[in-house]
Length: 90
Image (cartoon, rainbow, N blue to C red; front, side, top):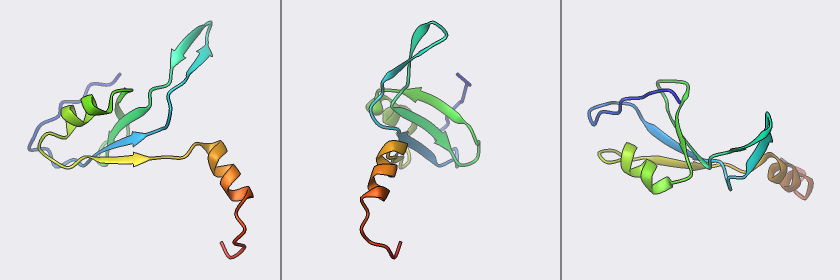
């Protein structure tokens, strides 16, 4: 995991992406976790940290500024909602 030193006077906006329930995947002969939350900011185009503990991430990165938590639909959910969409104008 890349290291990131957070400072309270940093002008970076911190985002926490909620990627949905965190299953594990079998990869290279072992189960690897897929963490539910990923922290990133708008000045560094990389993930700063992963975790399943949202409160820990909010405490760590959001003590002196607003933290934006973004929720994403899974690809399969998005496909299903498009298939059932009856509004043809979109």
